Structure formats: C-alpha cells, structure tokens
Image 1 (cartoon, rainbow, N blue to C red):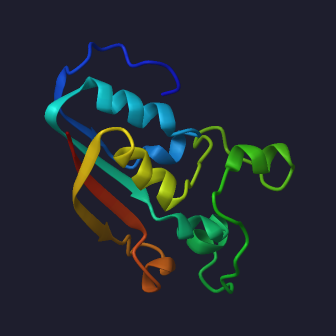
Image 2: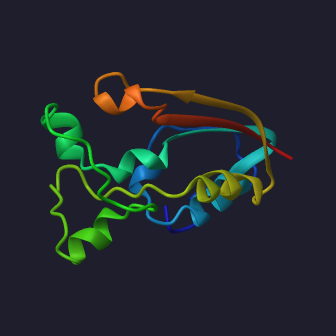
Length: 144
C-alpha cells in the first residue's frame, strides 16, 4: 500500500476497502492511489475502526471482562512503535495495527478528489466497549 497500485489510471468503477486501514501505517498513498485508479464518478467505500477503540488494552477488553477499563494509549495508536519501545508485544499472526485519526481517515479521502456522499457508524456487540459508542465507521465517496 506504500507503492503505486499496479493499475492504469481510471480503471475501476468501485473500490471496496473493508476495515483494512488498521493494517496500513501511512494512508496517504492508499487514498491517492485509490483516487487515481477510480473512474470519474466511481465510488470508494471505506470501513475503519473508530480511533477511540484503540485507547484501551485489547486484552482487557476481550479477555478480562471483569477488569476495569482504563485509558492506556493515545491516538493515533501505532502498535509497531509501541512494540519497538518495549511497551507491548505483537503476535506476528495478527500483524501491526494503526488507529489513525478521523482527520487522517476522512481528510485523506477529501483531499484526493473524492467527495463524501454517505457516512455510517456501527458497533461490534461482541465486546463491552460497544456499550459506550460506535466502534466502526464507513464512508462512501464519489470521485469528482
């Protein structure tokens, strides 16, 4: 996602990016390239995690339901940097995760010739954070 996509300009009518931005450290190129390969009038559908979810320790959120939830991390969350600093350890099966700010997620689309035409929030009721707010966001943009 850090290199040019292997497609010609204006190739696609629609790009669907499910919640994969969490695994991309720098979104700038991804949004630039998505816009480049979309046809004029093409749609970009993007889903991503609401950044506030990353402020809590996932082990406590998922595996220790009786422990008190405490804020642990700041936003933007960067598990690669936190691991390098010795603050967390990452299971290689899951890879690094990056929360990104709402500005990075939304403005990244808008500044690359895309106009937002819809916005949706949802929650994953499998964990207790969903009691406090929506943890997923989806945007729909059209290429101008």
